Amino acid sequence: MKKSVSILLLAALICSLFAGCSIETKIQSGTEESKYSFYYLNAAETTIKSEPYTPKEETKEFMVKDLLQKIGDRQAPEGAVSLLPEKVSINSYDVQKDLLIIDFSKEYSDMGSAREVLTRAGILDTLIQIPDIQRIRFTVNGKELTDSRNKKIEDMTEDTFVEYNRKDSENYR
Image 1 (cartoon, rainbow, N blue to C red):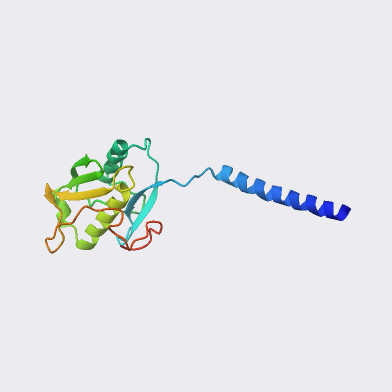
Image 2: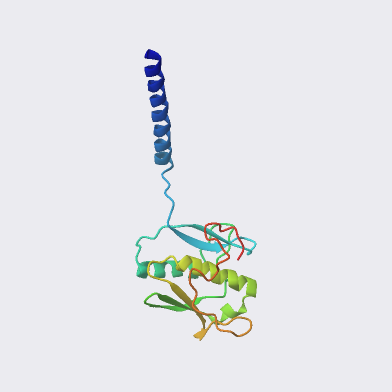
């Protein structure tokens, strides 16, 4: 009987030590995974990477303005590349219910096709997370964005680049 009680007490002590360690580790690290991300290109411009983004306000109006400003300011971590090339700028944007329309300068059309797709995908991934934004439309100098065959690129949604797993930002689109 004494042996059983001793074993139970030892097991309870070990369990409480493990529980205490895991709680202490979470408190010490102080990190909580952000539910938003800001996207940019890796240094080789071959894939999209992300970093956590924590907005000061989680409203559509604030996040649209803040994220577009970060994109327009060409923010990217050290050793990374901004989504927008140096000469490309954002002319304007318009929010219409669940649609965000972004108008870029005419230099947007000068990007190579691979860079353009990565830029578009990174901007889409950055902005589609905004509450109540479900579609994004790009225009260039006031005209609808078209592909290399002059076909209109439709409104983009979170499913536009389906082969890409957003949780694994190392994949190439």
